[in-house]
Amino acid sequence: MRDETLIKVRDVMVSPVITIDAEETVEEACRIMGEKHIGSVIVTEGGKPSGIFTERDLLTKILLKDHSLIKEKVKNFMSSPLTVITPDFELKEAARVMTQLKIRRLPVVHKDQLLGIITSADITRVIGESPLNI
Image 1 (cartoon, rainbow, N blue to C red):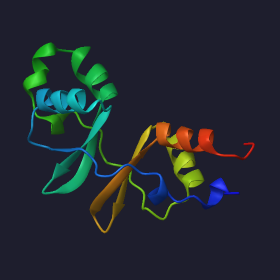
Image 2 (cartoon, rainbow, N blue to C red):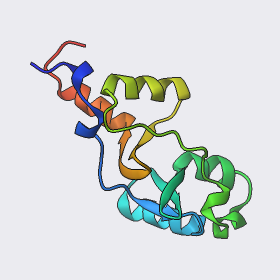
Image 3 (cartoon, helix red, strand yellow):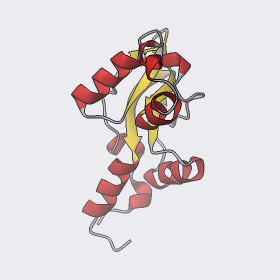
């Protein structure tokens, strides 16, 4: 029987992570998200994660304001600073961070290297597959 408090983020995270350079356009970010059927991309600068661009950013910062912004650089609309965790975080702690910050995605980073991403959907899946009564 497995104990959810002992599950590490590295056991659940999705890897590799889909990224986009900060100088790319919002339009390109949307194209990638649509093709990959994902709700976010990690924005990188100099190869290092610097922010996240999500469906919510698209809706609240762009579409509700001005459609012409779709040609702007994604870095102008990403959520930053980026909240990250390490692969050694316990799953329960990752869930707690997400709840406290009201976010649904946490990039997993070790020594400035992007290793993966964990989402609220990943945590829900693990709990749903658990034989334990939670």
